[in-house]
Length: 342
Image (cartoon, rainbow, N blue to C red; front, top):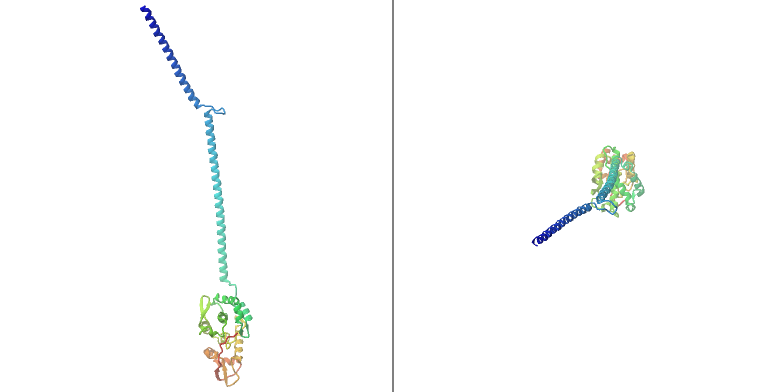
């Protein structure tokens, strides 16, 4: 009985051992299977099929290639944009440089034109002062028998100012002849006398403008300012020793020598001065030679008697241009009218 019990126990132990081995083997197989499944899963996770039948590695490579292509395309696009911007910038620059070049060329051309124009003006003025075309036409229009139409001149003052501008812009040159210089100053004296009257017109006399109108400095010639007295005394009388000028200069008054209705010109100056002198001496409102023993003459011969010394004195001068033969006549002077020569 004892042996049977021991046999049963021993058989039970063997059975349990066998079951344990089987379970262990099964567990091992399960473990290996699980491990294999994990490895397979891991491998499968790396080689999952994409929906188009390619592996993930191929898909990843494709995606990578696609991404690289997109990057390259983007780079190309950026490069193209950059090139376009560069081209546009270059075009703008070229355009700017072209415009700047054109502007510079234009400015340079304008500068050359201005220089040439200035040089041309310096070398060749738009008028020949010695012809006195405007002055000649002006005097012919507004002066008649020594009477000056100041009212009409004032109404058309631009004509006067055009002549004034010619004198103001002219510089008497040392290269001019004596007659050219003398004509210029005689004509300047007369036209600026007219301007003085017109600027203050209406007036009844030049002496009404100011107490000493001949000392008024208002004449601008080549940057210098003169008075009528300055032109007559400091230039004409002092430099040219020509007594006949007293019958060419007009003081805008009735007792003055009449204003010639022509400009004095270098080629005809001598004959013009002679004609004016004879006309003045033969004007009975200014001189009286009715007596052989006494003469009544203009106060001009009194005020400027020293200027006639080069001609042998006043009487000798009168005899020369009047055609008389006075020999020490009694001399008196006529009253001088400062009424306007209108």
